[in-house]
Image 1 (cartoon, helix red, strand yellow):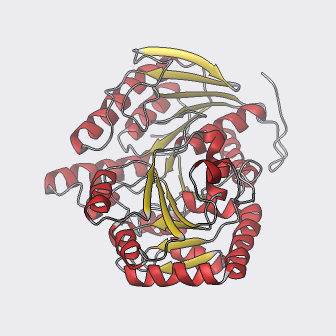
Image 2 (cartoon, rainbow, N blue to C red; image 1 turned 60 degrees about the vertical axis):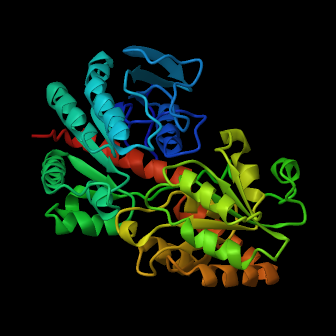
Length: 427
């Protein structure tokens, strides 16, 4: 195995890492990007990396060519050994089907982990929370440590959005959550709010590692607005307000509708909604019923087009409703910062996402439900282009310093190497 000296610890790791994650595809513009970048960069730095994951199906809810939904299939992608297992495929818009998709993956991921070669450490992602059981059991069998990576706080995130209401179900998942927190060797979180949440649940602070979400500032760079995406979609001469991402339960598209109604007579302002999600159909229907010609919808764009799509907007929206403020951190914020575009965050002022935007001076924050204020802030930035430029520069500068891909992945590597070196294993 190739041995590479870790630039942080100064030791020679060459460790074997077994990742477990729902999604893994270099082509996706979603949460899969972060695990893809982490796995590929660790492989490039001399580690032996294997990932057990699903067959690509996001966001269409059907198996993407050239794949087939088989029990087990293996491939090598950019130096990473990828083992894909069978799962029930769902669009994710129906709760029960989405749960079945996750449950079947968590079950068959165990067989994928058995098919994986030797490993020194297991690293699993949550959600889905039950995947932690797969990771825990795999680490027990191999007698190796396990790191649990939290991208959302579950079941709290599902409870706060009303997805889970049954007391027995809540109790079941809460017990599962406490079990996994107790048995993980270490827990990696993406925000200070997550850290506070875990400490309140009795997790020792010294067991928690904070590594924020990142963006690739080499791939997503400041670009001119006039590019292929702008021209192909007739955005020339328009002030483009873009929302690019999942229209999930934590989003609040109704505030965009309110602002669009107020700005309907502003013919040079257009809203571009790029993405899918459980709230898209209702959002689209409301747009049609209200006759809002200033809102346009797009499907997720190819990864290669993503930087130009971001650059085509004058202002980017990020949404986080009241219920999700303490259990989510929108990762799209960091890509917007990397593109040097201003962020207009629609979220509670007390949220960590709001703190991020305000402290770094990379945008503005309004509370959910303030459609009129959203319209006012859009007009304000349109009339003060220099302010928008300064906000974009601030975000880019902070991104390069604290939230770059290189910086955050080195933090992950440092923790992985230290945990393997300590040889502490789950109970």
